[in-house]
Each structure stands twice: as C-alpha cells, then as structure tokens.
Length: 327
Image (cartoon, rainbow, N blue to C red; front, side, top):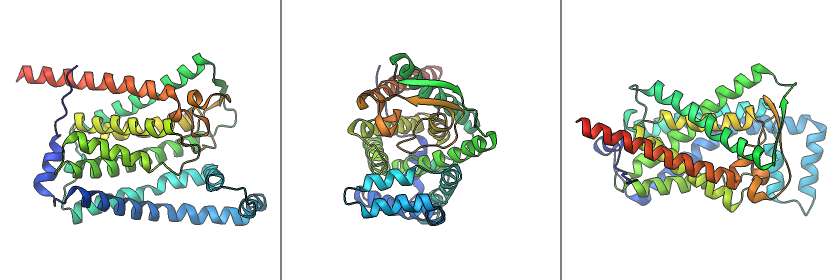
C-alpha cells in the first residue's frame, strides 16, 4: 500500500487566510489557548466537586486522610477525583463546550481563520459524522470481544440499575467532549502546524500533544501513552482524508461513550457511574488488561487501532485512486 499524505484543502485554506507563525510559536500559542480553555471549563466542575466533598462527611474524611497520610501520592488524589458521581461526570463533559468556544473564538478572531479551515464543513458533514459514530462503536467493541475471547473481560449482562435518562445525558455529553478535543487538537492545532510544516510532522506533533494531555490520568502506562498517540494519529489521518472534523469527532465521541457508558469500562482512567452493561475487567497482566487506565492501555487496543488505521488508509487511498482515474 502506497502511503500518500498530502495537506487537505482545509489546511491550504488556513494557509491562505490565517496568520502564519513559526513552528515554535504555533506550539506555545496552542498550549496557552488549550490551558486557558481547559482551566475555565474545569472551574465549574471543580467548584461543584469541592461542594460535594465538603457536604459529604464520608468523602471529606477520605480527602482528609489522603492529605494527612504521608504515603499518599498525587495519583491517589487524582484517583479519588476521577471516581465521580454521574452528575459530576456529566457536568464535566458538558463544560467542555467552553473549550470549543475558546478555540473557535481564538481561531476566528485572532488567527483570522474561517470555520471551514477548522474542518467545520456542511458538505457530507452529517454522513461523515454518522460513519464516525459507527466506526468508533465497532472499534471499541472489537477490543471488548477480544478481551472476552482472551478471558480477562467478563460481561455479566444488563445493568439493572441503568437509568436511560442518565445514559442519554452521557451520550450528549460525550458528543460535546469528543468534538472539543477534535476541534482543539485536529481542527485548530494540526491544521495551524500545516501552514509551515509537512502533514506528517503536524500529525506526529499534535498526536504527541494529545497523549501528553492525558498524563495526569490515573493508571497511565507507557503502553497507554503509546496507544493514545496511535489514536491521535488515526484521528489526524481521519481529518486529512475526509477534509473535515466530523468523522473524527464522531469516532472519538462514540469510542468514549461505548467504552464508559455502554460497556462500563474505565475511560482513560476515569470511571463512569451508570452503564448499560455490567462488565468487569479481571485482575491480571496490565499489559493485557490495561490496568486502572482501562482497555485503552492494553495491547489489545494497540492491535485493534493498528488494524483500523491500516484499513482506513487502504480504504481512503483506494477511494482517491478511483477518483483520480475518473478525472
């Protein structure tokens, strides 16, 4: 399979209409925009979580023991913070809308880029989004099926305590959260890097940044970090090949939703309260199971993502070849 990685039309448009900075300036500008947007987005959940800690005697005592215990580590505190209630988790997901607004305002008002150059395109948008949702659901389901076959994933059946309204709120929340990360890392950062750099360099740098933004998540391992980079590369190529943000955003959102809310498996080290199915990852080799980070940190996810990446590139390269022949 011949690998062709040309800059998409949205990157060419960004180079024509937006401000062009050096490679280093693009990086620190992105870090600043991302940190400010994420900080503001996290303020409301943080205040709400602090209220929960102070009003719940058991949670307050647990937090107090962590601070007073010399053996407690930062990861212990992060693990306590990520064991959220449904309300807290859903609020956190919806608040990522603030990151979306921050990125859109910065790109449009400061860099003078159109929404088109960020991959927000009407043509085929709905079709690509639905395709992304389907492929995302199938991809993670393949990870789960492999886990069941290998004996470390046990699906016990339907969760009798499942609340359909909460599941719906999770679904909408993950749609917002998935889009927020895609518009930030791919629609903004990757495309901005392509103004002066090659597509390959932009893909690798934004994927590395994507993995680094998960560094504080509980249970992160070297393999989990590599898998996050691999997912970032796949999503970057998805944007390049479809010339919009929609397919990648749909994939990202559904991958997280199916993982956490449907199967009830930890999403990048964060536990979802309510799930459609009652599932358990049996203790064992972290290399195989992903440990506290969840299946995203397992070798199974590595293999599935590698296969999906190769098949995706084969499909789009073949599609482009047919289009070139037709022309």
